[in-house]
Image (cartoon, rainbow, N blue to C red):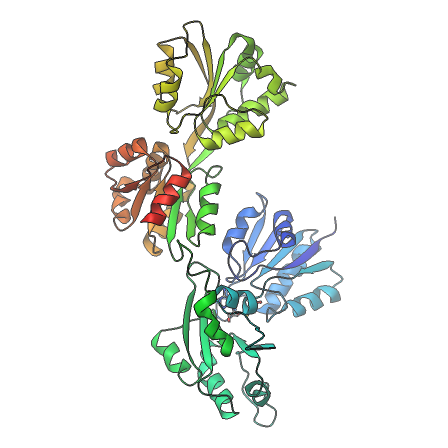
Length: 501
Ligand code: SAH
């Protein structure tokens, strides 16, 4: 097998500002080499056994020197591996992508370069600043602010040309030299009143934008303690921010929300928070263990003709059931004589994906509501099949059992994932978290089990949002103070509760 290197532009930070091709390279990589500007969440898209190599931030002592980075990339490729080198923004915009490519070329290693959205353009965009505009700027210039010691005769940068263009100037890596940059531009004739924006952590939930003028910007930056990574944008276009600042106006902008659901279920909440400008911090407290031996399920499917109802209570339950059906050479026609019930819209949707519209989906997605609907129609001669999690609540089985025969088959189990303890505690102590969401009783229990009862006080400054009454009750039992409960017991309901708050 021949190795190959992909130099991938990982965009400015917003998770979704990545190309399809870039994502593909992440998914197929055997090794991913990344630094601090690439959004770390992309690593979740990698193959299970992918090797991750962190090469540090560009301007610190902890960074792997460029030569070592080049060496690692080349060596791994020579071992026959697919290496994806993730670089913030675009690989060729001050990303040293050119140098890395040249070395690969000289060593005869196959490579491709995948462009990315550079922070110089995309970062300004999210700050509400268009880099060109018919009325204000007909060119733009992206300049390194990492100035080598200026040779008076042959300055590295033609300040005179920059000062006398009408185009937008964007300096990258310029915070440390801001005083020099503004002084040089003013000295060469640029107006002291030219608007300047300092855009830090652009496109991320913690984006911060400070505006000033060329004359005052250094002072402003010192006062406001501006730190890298920051873009320095100079030009009239900065003023358009008042009208074009769509990103910071999103309803959850700047909010960090901890999402505790099982990995397979959390994606829709995470998606929604992201779309609304918030920062979802995903903590998978539970994982799904499918039972290897599903002979019991197989037997009941063989006898499916004896049943009149099939009750599915989770997306996982649906997947396991239909996969088994498929494995046995059957399809949805085998269920033609059954009434099918779903708890939860996600469950119903998954059933629909398998070609069936559920007959009964209760208005509120809890077992009690399903039973209220079933109670008047169930006859003593009915027979109900419930393939579901081992540790599910007994309520439905007990209640239905009072009316007719019910068969519960355990197809999977949700288990606590203790490997996350340190990570969760670190997030709780370090990050400024505004909300934490609980979408089921089991996530509450598992969460507390992971962090330990002794650490519950770490949640005291975080607003707890519960999906519904049963989850709230469980939270209370663990001395957790629920701040608000969703009016409708759905993911959307929880999101709405947070927005309204
Ligand atoms: N290849 C990258 C730039 C690498 S140089 C790109 O195309 O964007 C690193 C500099 O880029 C930082 O010092 C900072 O000035 C800028 N930068 C990159 N991402 C940024 C972000 N999200 N917010 C603000 N500045 C950013």
